[in-house]
Amino acid sequence: MEQGPDEEFREFVHGRWTAMVRLAYGLTGDLGHAEDVVQTAFAKAYAAWPKVIRTGNPDAYVRRIVVNENRNRFRKQQVPERLTDTMPESVALDANHDLDDRSALMAALRALGPRQRAVVVLRYWLDLTPAETAATLNCSVGTVKSQASRALATLRESTELVDGDRR
Image 1 (cartoon, rainbow, N blue to C red):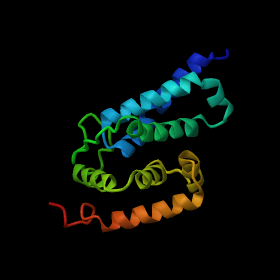
Image 2 (spheres, rainbow, N blue to C red):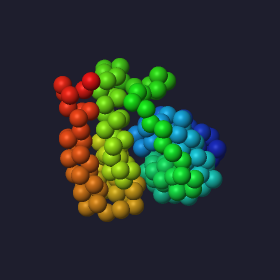
Image 3 (cartoon, one colour):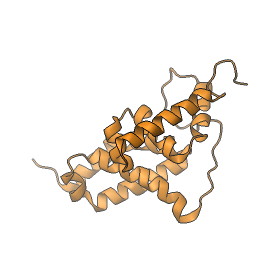
Image 4 (cartoon, rainbow, N blue to C red):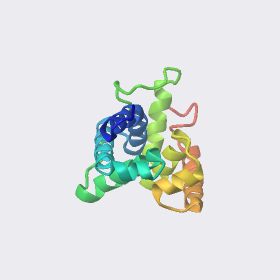
């Protein structure tokens, strides 16, 4: 039996919600904003679901909406970012990582500009290829590589990420 578009979309959202929230969290640094961005992205995807399916890669389409919605959040209303040094308790993260390491990583990511942060999150957190990252950000592969190189150089110099320098 064939599924209807609503059921197909419902299954898509159910299977991708966590990954999209992780992406948005990496971009925003705030779980509440991340969930808002993802909810808006899925609402837009639902409104254009036949078009999304025709692209052949609905994951990439929705990732792009998430990145664009995060950018638009600041364009529309100058929302001040209120980022903290600690991760929210409700975020489901790998138990093998130390909370201090996660906090240090989030602090270092917040020090990056929005474009570099997006590149780092897409390339290294979500493990996208340079071409997939470029498509998501609507830029060239060369731009992705140069932004990643600069971001990684900045992260390497970050005192939050250097062992022994944490307080």
